[in-house]
Length: 123
Image 1: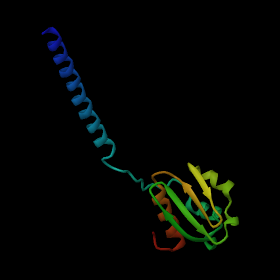
Image 2: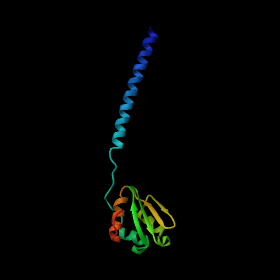
Image 3: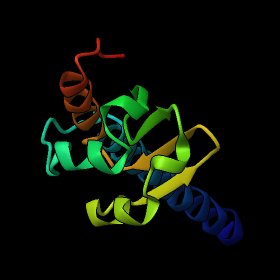
Image 4: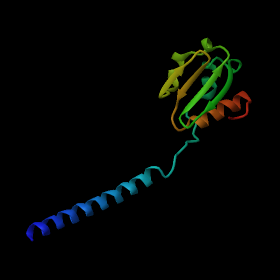
């Protein structure tokens, strides 16, 4: 009888711990995935960035995601990759006709400003 009672309390204790752990995990997940924050702050000089990208004439289009800005260029050789580092992006990926920069959650705002200076509709 003692063994049955012992195992009953073990199962009851572990069950209670599991219910508590699941409840805490669900509460934490709800906090984390509740909202994606996108910043509207432009903390760089957009005109200098346009110059480093080869000027207005070299930029064909600018698109953005939450974290990245992709610039399509007429001539990628006119883009000064070393000078892009002064804007402190978290990453730079250069292709033959484009450059993608990771600026974090304010990428959309930066792309919007670039498109305004270029006189283009925002994507």
